[in-house]
Length: 249
Picture 1 (cartoon, rainbow, N blue to C red):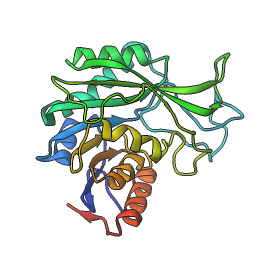
Picture 2: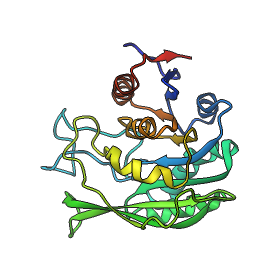
Picture 3: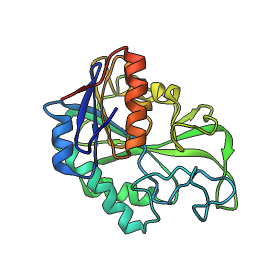
């Protein structure tokens, strides 16, 4: 399948765009007339992530998976980055909405600051507790990820009193994407603030786990991915799950 930057495809009832979620014009084209119920995002953490257990400091192998838009950033740069991918979405949010944004602890303050400067309300921190730690540059191995939860304007929980610590096994080293999130984990989060038929927006689709979780739950995913390799992975996975072909729109 040959694709070009800026193209948008419909797969089943999901919409996926191959391009940059920081580009306001492209974001508008991808979303169209839809209204977004939740933003579910796993953005680059601003730490130049490379999946190479032997050497985190340099790119030593052609097999290392580099995440586009992920490079070492200052706190102020990451705050601006956060605003750039979230601001274009604001006009398309439902009256009652929510966001769930995965992040690491080092850039969490900048993420929160960027959200609040745009007018988003920060609700609370959720924690994904993993069954085993992952490699880290830091003194202590990390066995969790943070998830910022909040909303813009108003929100309404559809499934109340879920716990703020979510235990779910982390996937083994993935061939699809270096920071791939388990579909089962996303399936536990999405119903808290959505109903069947609601729209979930993911500006960094990666290998498409959000879209697959939405398909399982009867939600519609609208998402964007900038990396050609990962975008093609999304198409392949969604076509298989929905039993439908990607249609360029």
